[in-house]
Every structure is written in structure tokens, then in C-alpha cells.
Amino acid sequence: MPNTPAQPDIHLVFPATEISVRRALLSLRASLKALAVDDLTIGMVEIILAEVANNIVEHAYPLNVSGTVTLACTKAEQGLRFEVCDQGRTLPGGEIPSKKEHDLEADRNQLPEGGFGWGLIRDMTTMLMYKRDQGRNILRFRVAFANI
Image 1: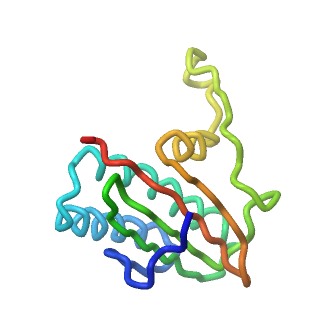
Image 2: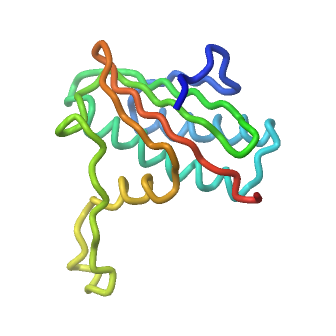
Image 3: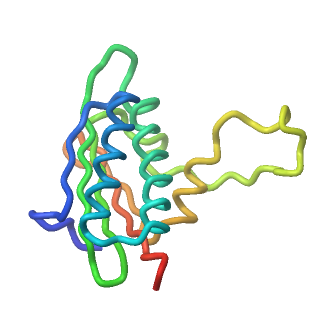
């Protein structure tokens, strides 16, 4: 996957906090609407980026350590290209966690807390890749337009 262009259609930088993630998602939604992206695709993007950004907030930055998240999005003919960066901890093992299979027929009380996010991200994106470069986590992926 080529690098995200120097001038993405959307570029957001926000603090790695829960409230900032919510605000960034609202801003992203408005920006995607302005780019004439369909509602179903916007909904998928919100799920994906909520998972990605909340993982950064919860796991990349240790308690009492502030940090930022940088999000770039470029609209292409078949979908959207994303790059999300932070300077937090490296992903465990230096790679994207594998998808975990869960018994969804189990009693609600038996379902694990967490472990679903990376499966959703993997299922809803293409060309998903991660690398650590000069102290930065870089996650890139594509989301196809839902109306194609």
C-alpha cells in the first residue's frame, strides 16, 4: 500500500483521551459527509476508528502519560484510505492481534470482556498493515464504499 499522500482529504490530530476520540469521530463524520461519502460507509468507518482510537487510548499510552493520535483519510475511487499514528507503546508482539473466535451462543455472563475489536477491524477493512517506525505506531487500511 502506498504511503498516505502529503495532502489527505481529512487530517485530524487529537489528544489520546476518550472525550477527544468522541469529538474526533464527530468531526470525521461531518468531513466524510462533506466528501459525499454514503451513510453506510460512514457508519462502518465510525465503528472501525472507534475501535482503533479507543485501543490507542486504553493500551498505547500508560496511565498519566499524555499523547496524541493523528488520523489521515484520503478518498479514492473505490473507498477510503486511512493512516492512524501514535507514539505510544508498540502493539504486543509488534503485530496486529489475530482475530479471536468467541462462542456467541454462550450466556451473556460467559462472554469475555474485550477481544472483539481487532476481529471487527480485520473484517471491515482491507490492506490492513501495521509498522513501528521511529517511535511511532502506524496503522494503515482501506474501507470500501458500501454502495459499490
